[in-house]
Length: 313
Image 1 (cartoon, one colour):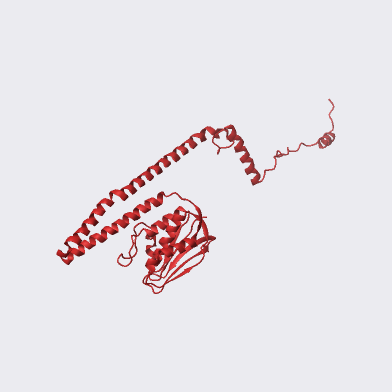
Image 2: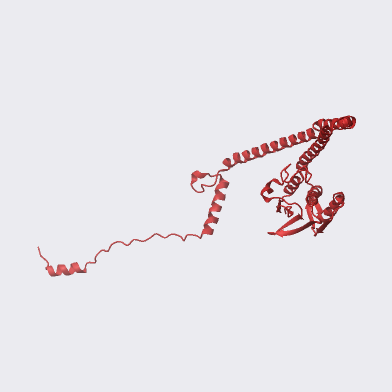
């Protein structure tokens, strides 16, 4: 056996190439789309999956429910709508029954009380003491007031069931007509009116006439202690919304009780000072609300009041 020299072995070892460590490379991946593109892609996926009726079990669109799951929800919604409609119809029938009772059943005993008090006063008044006659007069006055309250309650019921019949309405003509009808309230008084143009709107003519009449009557009544009384009717713009107003320099009210103004039968002044049944502003609130608007008031006691209202868009 022939041995090779060690030097030759070392030279050959030096010429043998060394094996380097393997280089790790990252596999190629497509660029990630932008957020808007991803959102559009997800939307297309949901639409396709929903059309196929694929549910959350696929893992592709966990927020999409199968068609079969949406059908019971739609049926339940229709059931609730039908039930609510029946409840509203029942409430409307109850309101009609109440109005009938007010118009007939309650008026009969009220007429009897008023008639008996009048007969007692006419036939036996001279024989009765002064205190008894005063009590008889109070019975008659109370019966008359009760009649007015029943009228107001009946009117409120009819107002809520009145179907809106919208048409083009000239508010200035309504104001002028209302003031002509209130001449009796203005007799013997000095009242200064300032009437700015209100223009035309689309609304129910009869309801808007009632609302404006109540606001004007309210201003005339509560300014009777002023000489002269000043009443202003106009419109302005607040936050891009047309706002109408009726302002007076009358008695005013304490703003702490402003939340009571538009409630039925609520009064902020003594009946001996200002007559009324507390239903006028409640009807104004109902009318404005039915037209998609809102109504509010600003005042300070003894310095007049301003009533604002809008009529929707």
